[in-house]
Length: 96
View 1: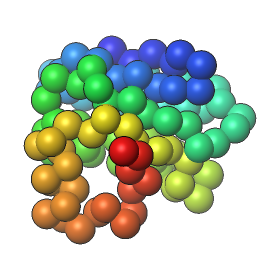
View 2: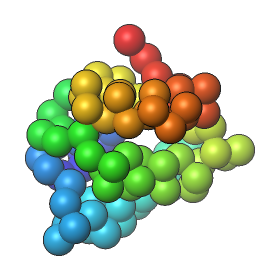
View 3: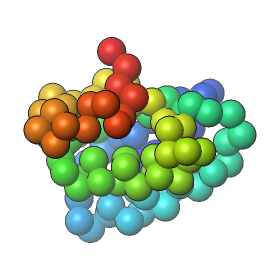
View 4: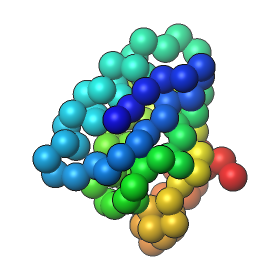
């Protein structure tokens, strides 16, 4: 599930092959409703930091101004390892 609370997009649950497009569309609608960026994407409620979940986040990022309109917070350990292995830490704005 994706919901906008204040200026923070909260992602909860598990993104898998059966629901990845639904997560993408739900998040995209909320992202496109915004006029001020960057928008914080809070991943504390994400159950599994997979490559598929990372792909959804990157697709969202590409839909923002200059593909830099999102900042990612509370990135799960597994997803952080994927980001580091792919050398994406300089391409993504990661908050501690």
